[in-house]
Image 1: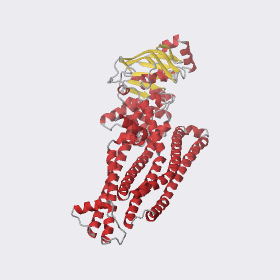
Image 2: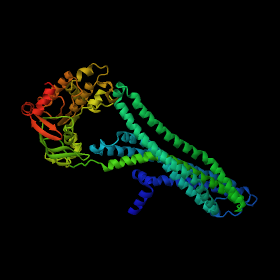
Image 3: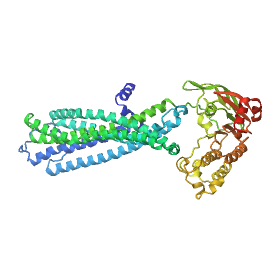
Image 4: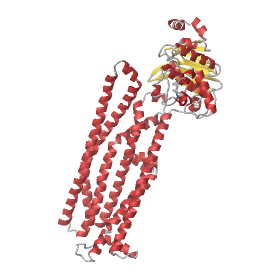
Length: 599
């Protein structure tokens, strides 16, 4: 069984990919397709007894020996059905009616499978992204991730439809060839030869289409990343007059995308244009061979041509569907590539759930390496519950990195990091992170209302409204919101485009104050605020001291005067730890930092 699975994965990797999400339901879809072609074949076979009936049983129409079809005719007669004009016509109607029902069921079922496949795939990617380690995430191209979850998934819907249409056409071709062999083996051989000749042309088209598809996918990934940067840095580009220069980069990528799309369109047009001439040409050739060399009778030839036409139609439909699949095969490669990244870079997670942070966080001899560069060196620190600690130091000193370690975003390279005597590796990290509030220098604003931004889409219950009012009061937002026409239902726009930097930061702070947390991390949280707003926020933060464990990464030293301890860092090491006044008295480096800010 394992050998069969490995064989399928190696030679039918695309089928294995779809099977992973749909299981044995795939085979029911194929069975319905076989039923369609089988019923169609039975219906076409009724033309032979029809010709016999019309010919009055003689050979005036060149009917001759019915060959293997006599078994079908004998089977019908054994059921007590006389071969009259009426009975034969009714049988044709019955077979084609059942074929229509089977076709309807097959088509609807495939739509259901496609919806199920896309839904499961989207959820699988989102779950995988949620499990991706933060360290790997910051190294992964954001444009690629966005393109896969949006554009590539849509392309994969087309790929799914084209792949299974191609597969179904092969099955139907097999059934028609089976009928052809049943009627006339020589004819079946001609069909195979004709199909082989057609395939020579399409193999060239396939190869060129695959190359164009991969180029299109690659350029689309690049374009997504460029658009993200264009939107995020629009203000800078506009203010510095660099917007036209950067726009030229996007335009260049657009030309490359459309050139690839044009190439695939031309190849698809060649494929479509060649279909009918190929079919007619091979039909003419078959008629000539049948009459001149194989001495076939008229009836056998006519029915053979019907099977041939159906089989050739399936063959050409397969060629077109497969070409369509290759056009979007880059999307499939894009998705599987991201899935591989997600599988290989899952964050490890322990089993111990932390319902509440009760005691302390202990860091002993912790190091952290980033791309073979040691960022943190021999960190020793104990953080007690409801203690307020500030981390200060020059840029690159490791302040934010140590915060990311404590928040469980990054793994320690070696050493020990414990929360309430449990190592971070033992903890179910999500349960711990649910107890954390995090406010960074770059405010997180969703394209929604103020209420939904602060409450994270909580329902408007009386309790949530009270918590909302308390949160906006503590974050100095109440006056601002009351001046708005739509109050808390005001839409904030893309990334809070309608807000000032200070307003964005206050909404981010209000969101964390709304939550039920034990640990509040403020990573340069007041750096975007004006002095007056900063003072109000600072008063709110000071009110939280003793109620939450506060970890503050600070650039403005005026905001940390009243914390319990200040951790001074330099080049990835802790230089000194003490209260603000004590550290100012005994540490020359810290005192110089204060003097430079004229405190």
